[in-house]
Image (cartoon, rainbow, N blue to C red; front, side, top):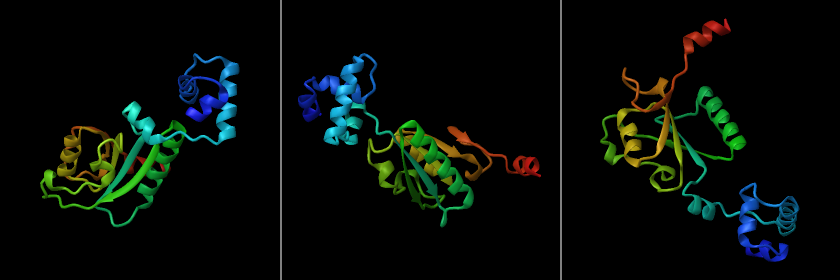
Length: 173
């Protein structure tokens, strides 16, 4: 950013406002800074940005207890990735295998979840159990569960998505 500011003869704050699409930058000045960014091949450092904003713009899709990515989960994953790309988010995919009777405190969570600040939100798919949902609650991170695959009869006490297989088949037929 310092190099861009120096070459464009503006402050680092102006470069920052252009990079973050803040409206209060003169159009001519914005064009000048944008041209210098392109000339220098400047690419923002996402780690630095996430540190300042206290967000990573990363969503994790965790497939639990699945040996393979089913066609359904593959389609869901592709849909999530498409939405993320259009919305300025990045998507990380990981798997997690654990036992249903394992205490939540002993679950070995994937690094994308266990590392603080790496992920802003989790989408949990696959076969999920109460202990994993409890572990996510302990992280204090937002999450959404694909509820069709949650074990037990009780829906999770969190954000969830449920799809209607029978209704879908009926409508398709």
